[in-house]
Length: 370
Image 1 (tube, helix red, strand yellow):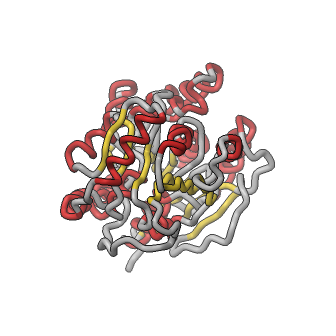
Image 2: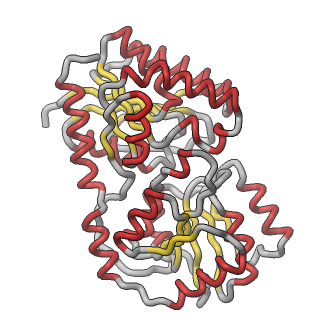
């Protein structure tokens, strides 16, 4: 297949757990683009082999303001000499290097915005940090001509603030047939409650932990790493829940669906700590759906729109331990309507989202605005 163009995709993480980056890069590669994905060595890096090219830039600072500054400087100099026709920046924390390098080289520039970056919990309550990232968006975002984001609410937010038109490409897994439950996670006859994702502030993990003493014959499995993982582990030890709550750490996303298939209930509980969470539509909503796992989720607009229209989970808006325990027990006792999940998966799959993403990328490469 003849190459359609060369695209650099940039992100601040180490690539290993980023399902969206892999989906986008794989789709572009499979449709004839020469793709290079650039991340960082901000965390321990394992071997990472893909059909497209990858590169992880070394950084001295591993987190915080100094990390973002150092990474963007290193990324800027890398992009000055990278062979590319389009620079695709993922989120606000990579736009500085991409925008400046694209202007200097007169290369096309586009964005994939996974969240409202100044509104994420790690930023929203830190006035100086929030004002810095907001100023970056105020300077750069009015000049964005091409891009997409993960849900309609975020697209409308940026339309109202900057007058830009972003497409919506939701973070949904590739379509695959349901193969039934498995025993990748095996706790005998106990029900399995599963959280998969970053173990960060605002994810509501502690709400399920607090409810576990009131939930009979069940375990809570947490897959992922993050800033509050050690705090959650200490909390479980203090509560005497080490036989009911299990932390598995990082699981490569290529293997994650096998773990998801073992679960009886998935959870996606978010605290209202900024518009980014309030408007979010996490990929795990669809990961659980694809494996016919009922979802217990926060009643936020984008998540609620999916669950109310397709009936693949239960929404909650308060989180008292006994209330959550009773709700979870009711879900366990309810039969799963597999036909409902099949219909939902026909509607939600990456193959449909891919068409929107490809059309935006093709337009960006075809037009003459830089």
